[in-house]
Length: 195
Image 1 (cartoon, rainbow, N blue to C red):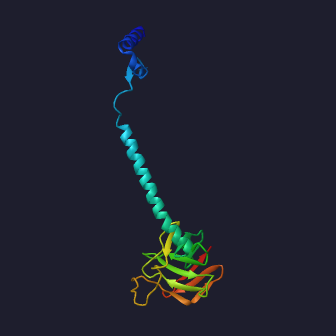
Image 2 (cartoon, one colour):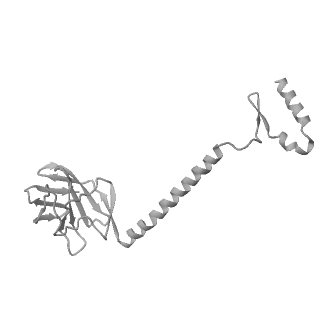
Image 3 (cartoon, rainbow, N blue to C red):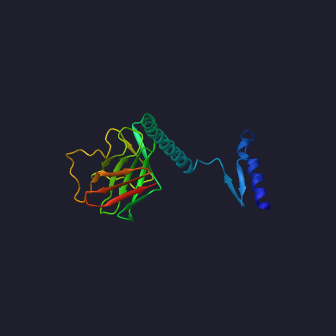
């Protein structure tokens, strides 16, 4: 320790009086001298780069959130939320259920065939209550929430659409929607959804 103290004292004497501030920047760390007047390390540019990336990502999220919020507030986009309900096909549980935000319609998705098949059922709220549209080649994703816009809804059911080979259209005359949805399909399957 005595050698370090002598080294600091000789260093202090060698520095002219006008540069006294440099003396304060020399620090002892575990027996070695550290000079804090060195050039900045590579950590500083990395911090600046990371900060720039974070700010850019935040701006992208904000720019995407504004139109989604606007279209949802104006009614151009409906959000569908996965319900805790059950879908039963011929007495066997196989499928999942989504309700729209206003709870006026449900999307019932069957998973008993090779590809999922979805049915959009209006259960309340408008003049077309208790109506059903078959999703044809589209089925609802198995996500907790997803949006559907009004410009090109997936369950539109045009007459010239070709059904996939395993398509199972509903028989609309068998539709019951009173706190649950129940219907039969063209292939003779009985589908019931409860929530």
